[in-house]
Image (cartoon, rainbow, N blue to C red):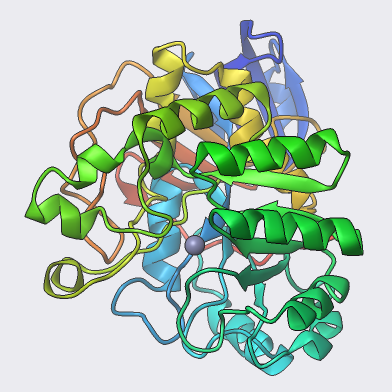
Length: 408
Ligand SMILES: [Zn+2]
């Protein structure tokens, strides 16, 4: 595939016009003018001078499959991802049954084959009942071990320090749901075991300060922020009965001062990645019972582009957060950037199309968005996966998604 007339942002923030040639799914050349003759019989896509970004790597999604497929499944979740410019997602293990044995992991993998519209990888789950002996068997098969230190359902909340330490020691990388003081506990385990740590969805200024201190010590600790913690506050949640139900999530939305601190850390590089924590529930569930979690893959890129438009963050920094760093941290070979030798995963964006985030036409089974009050900083026109169009102006092509190699 030859993608002509792409506006791309260089690391020094200059914007230039380039053609991108993709062969066998890989980017082989990025140059000012690549003649059509060089592309042989390749398909030609004209980006028309619009912004072209590397496909988004979303390191934090809950696709609800298997077991909770009335909320989302691999098909709908990955289509929502394609529409949002996400070309790779990592799926969390708290499905039904939870992914806490090698057999359950292999079973989940088998069920996903042929159903994803973009590429994907999996997490393995640490269990309260101590499944640390299973973890070495998952090496090379998962992106990381996920551990819940605060809240979770069933067997996935691990509080026993000895079990936690064994889980760390047997893992290549541990991702944690840790809030408040639990962030320090997780960092302590990283320091004790030397095993790299990924802190999911940091939201409090104090948590970000703990991350900063750990990094200053030279510890292999990484931090993630979510779009909802960057764009919404406790005030938004407390507005009325409806928002109290729909904006309920873990970690909860925070004060304005926390949000400002989080933005500063996102800009400075203290925060490494943005993950959506796509955690869909149906409208019926959100209104009839207490559920935590909001959907995100479909709108996160369009939403984050508003911050670029407002000068809150540069495009090169956004590309690091959304593509380069998650691919690097989780060892996703081939993913993470517009460079020769990387996968031909591209998103063509119309930056002039800046309406409100659309509450209709939602692909996710959840059928709603927490961002309905907010504006888009652009629109995803086309998503390209390894040199094939998978989404273009409302139409889907595929499914061509495959599981990608994870881990180091
Ligand atoms: Zn999550």
